[in-house]
Length: 165
Image (spheres, rainbow, N blue to C red):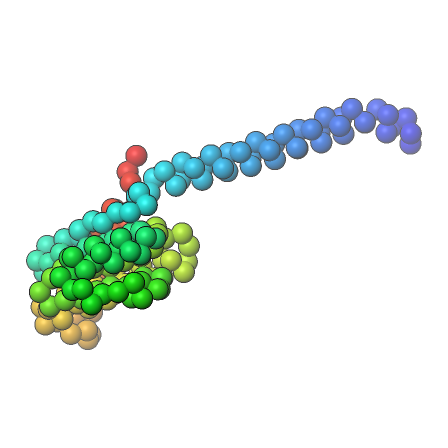
């Protein structure tokens, strides 16, 4: 038994080193992938306009964790100084006005399920505002129009949030 161990010891040692190096390399590659992945996304503060051509309306999207900067931007766009920092004490919010483009704020680019759900939630508010403006209530006969609008806003949102390489 001891002689077999002596014969296999170099192989076992080499295998352990190989496994260790592989794990270190994989960990480094994962960090590199994360760095490259994060590089694809927008800057820490960004505001972009989504234009919905079918219903001829625009919507602002603001992405920043700087709630003061977000508040000032929304106040200016909505021409409403009653908007306060307390309004931004959440995961996302959409501000609606009858005569101004809606403003949707989220603190950062979606990172997981909870963030994606928040974006979907806020996009629904934007769609509801548009459909109210054009007098199309949500019912069976308008379901496809609502679905298409939500799809289009979602597509434009992610097209602006994720950079193309």
